[in-house]
Length: 151
Image 1 (tube, helix red, strand yellow):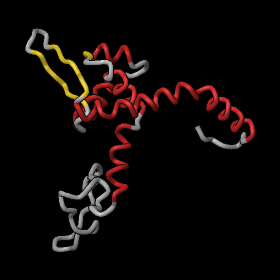
Image 2 (tube, one colour):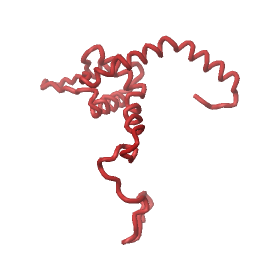
Image 3 (cartoon, helix red, strand yellow):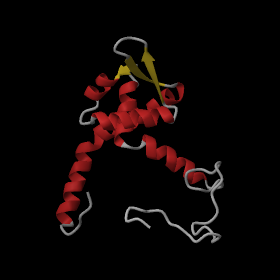
Image 4 (cartoon, helix red, strand yellow):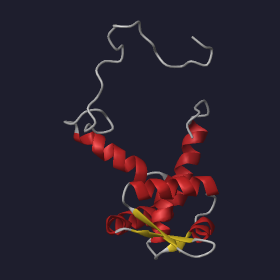
């Protein structure tokens, strides 16, 4: 075995130590019968801060990549690329490439993504409305619990 080898290997004819291969139709949790798994998978995507901000921005209409990057304060080019690709993969964003030189690309919400905007906007509005109260609560908690490392 080489020093860079990272896979688990078993002698020929031995049973797979990780168990039988999972069928391709299982959800990301590996269990068809557990509804929380599907919910978790979707919430992981739409619950991350960059996805929420991109969806809020695209709710105003199609945007080019640089427009999105300027509008979403603090997002790197790499993170924006990953975010729009993930949203595209999930069917929430449509990426359109126009046959120009150089190629122009815009991003817009799909019908499914547009159906999500009122929820995401409500969450964003709630966050803005309550940020001072939350900041004060955090400050109070941190003063009372100086030995914690929660952030």
